[in-house]
View 1: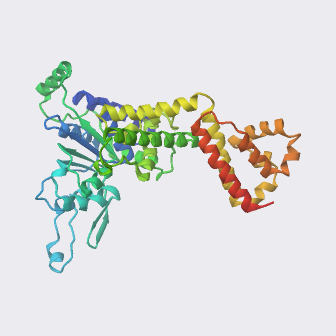
View 2: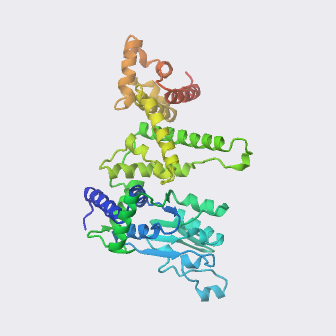
View 3: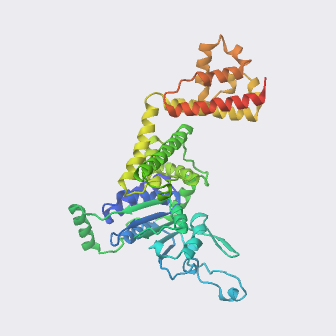
Length: 430
């Protein structure tokens, strides 16, 4: 079957709609789940009993063909071989731990772990490298795993050092609240009376190999097609994430005001999670039929940084997005960031190759976002471009110094680049 990005985008949209018709009032979580598929990450579903977590997971998996699925109900009595495959008895007799991984989670593409926190800490710890590095590491046995996405379900959170590490492996998290709206309850009852708790077979399924190829394109490991994030959009994304992290921690401190510092832990976004959010940006752009991420995609990063199903967290992320977006749009903030980041690229080039400063700036800056802006500035500040060629360091330092930021976020970037300019030009000397 031929691989087509346009066709795959349409198929994924239709698949999400199909699941939404089967599992009522879960559109946002379904969208989040398809983002998990597109980025090759894991999804954790938390709710009270009887709200359809298993049905949702199974219906999502049913939309793909050619994928091996591993299913397990976790319990405290289980050992790692439940997930990794039975031990080779003959090798165990000589002191070697070796699992027969055939049919185990190691060799499957999708996995569903029901009541994951019923598993004991020893088993959960053994799962860490499998979920994150996609490798099964048990004793001297170290083999790659096929796992694309694991969906885990739980009725409760059990907090320990190990479970916190497990939670970190699930980039996407949702809480499913019981539906009390009469119309929603009617629709759920109608679905149940028609299909009971059965998973519906879709008329059309998506080739898992195509999903895998698309995920590799989004991650950048397959370079046959590229989904792009501009430098200014990348910087904007980091500003929003930083603001959200600060806001969450400020809210935490207000909530626990008067308590000791040990009464709560800071909200922390790891560099690994922040980096992986870029894959989500590319996935969101693809779902909208684009190859370039926009500010609208950044607003949906709450799929990773907030818990879907908790309105307060989502609203806080959207507020951070709007705060930064409005600040930059109040003037030409995005354009200033684009220029400053182009200036930063030029500084890197100068640090690697000092001879750049010996060339006329209008040739050095050809085909860069900085070129026209700097040349316009030169026309106003100096008699001619030729005169400025011999004073490139002074010209560049003056250019960055005289740029007037439209907001604090741009001012912060400008000040950092002024220090960087001073450092690099002092190294070079006259």
